[in-house]
Length: 493
RNA sequence: GCUCCGGUAGUGUAGUCCGGCCAAUCAUGAGGGACUCUCACUCCCUCGACUUGGGUUCAAAUCCCAACCGGAGCACCA
Image (cartoon, rainbow, N blue to C red; front, side):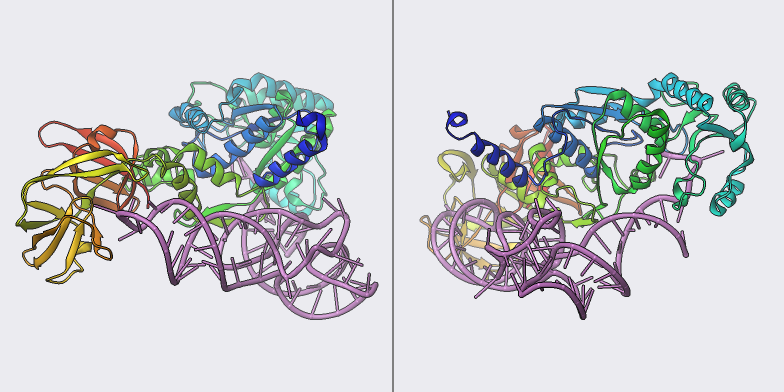
């Protein structure tokens, strides 16, 4: 209908949409194949989520293909972690970014060797036996290594020697010819392959492994990648790879870069640093609520949609950014608040003895939007309240939410007497919990809050609920033997 | 040191390509108020930015030059 009346309006709509999501339109969008290419040396973090979300969103927008590729060709320095392959896939799926294709770079070794040999034959690559230090000196002076002019045949012989064990680690590398006098030293004759005498975690027994620039360049072409979005730390990397594309007569994909992202609440983090801290016992695991991993955020009860919106709103910008999780909290709150059941939870509870009341049952709405659906909390003559709420004075009227009003008789010990039933405007309202309620511990990014909750929370396993006046939490674990014990992960206020 | 990139409110972002409609958008945040049996949600109001200095022009956030500040790469890591 609208297409018929005003097709240009629809087009406009799409433009607006692009602006609204902060992701600008991509050029050459007729055909879009994009990839996210992590090294699975640890689980996905909030930083990885940016790569997953932005790449997959673009693929979706243009009806293209989203590829998850594991750049796992370093068995040594950034050694892949076996479990992480599946974790990444899990996290992608969780974020609604199920890849159309999943590949392991380490499965493509024959392909890389094929091109290595092709380049050697072409005279575009050579085996260099300079020491690391010596080559650096030459490079900085703009001088070629003597091996650079070796005949392709000789280079090929020496390449085979790299493969068959004639050379040991560090004794020889395969370099890609660029321009030894290029004004940017970083681009001069870079290394395509090096020797690593360490079995790959996946059990692969190659000893000559490609470095990122080679692997990624070949792989992007093999997969038909059309658009690349990645960190600007790979800026020079791209220029290196373009030399390879020139050698092979290929066109380099369209690329975009983003700057470094640092999150106020997490500071700067790296997968390797986290790995170390976990092994030292600083954290309980990769899903410790204090960590910026997707597994941790999931456990804390963040919705994938909120993470997606949070990331998309950052846009794609080359400037480095420092963002607060408050933005993520706001997004998540919008999603979770309308549906999260309300419960009372009192941390570090203190007992309030109430006189003059008869046993009753409090009716508290599961959600403020519908008072007809409520929890029932039996109350005898005592409740628990939070010490934070003990700001009242003797004689003050205090409203126990959804229960009744009491008048404070004594603060030490805490005693009150029943005052009235109906709400009195202007009365301080506090939440409370029955003394015999389940034991609840809330794991927060800054520590553990121990307290008591109300019955019913144990039925919310895996759900995000709101502990009134405390914050949102995800019910993580329920132990029912004897006294009910519940473990929650703090989401946000 | 060499090479590259970036600088719009506290934070993130739109606008910069193709100067004027930008006394600069939206979100988040902060302050205030309304609503509410939550310090949540919702609604209203307020706060707050074009790094600096030159130049071009009738007109500059937008173009040019310089400076300053910030970042990245210069690994047999990704």
